[in-house]
Image (cartoon, rainbow, N blue to C red; front, side):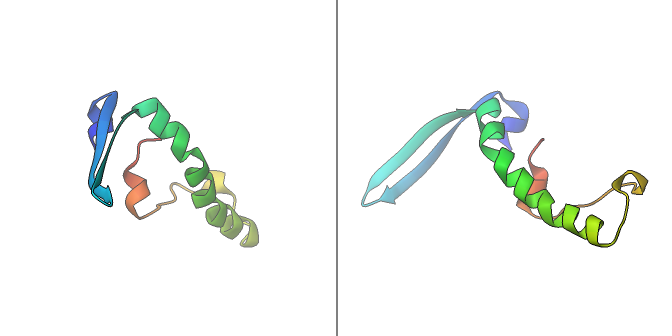
Length: 74
């Protein structure tokens, strides 16, 4: 949620492996770049359903996706 309000944030994972802590900074732009493939694979099943049912996505008011990634700004 921090990247919704800030351009950059720090990710901190204590004791990631054998007592080693992990800290990294990431920008909103870099995070979005990393998520592009996730968004594409998330939409594939939706596109398959639309194709199989011969529905025109332009005639739909909205398609609602659920889950954690729906909160990520696109």
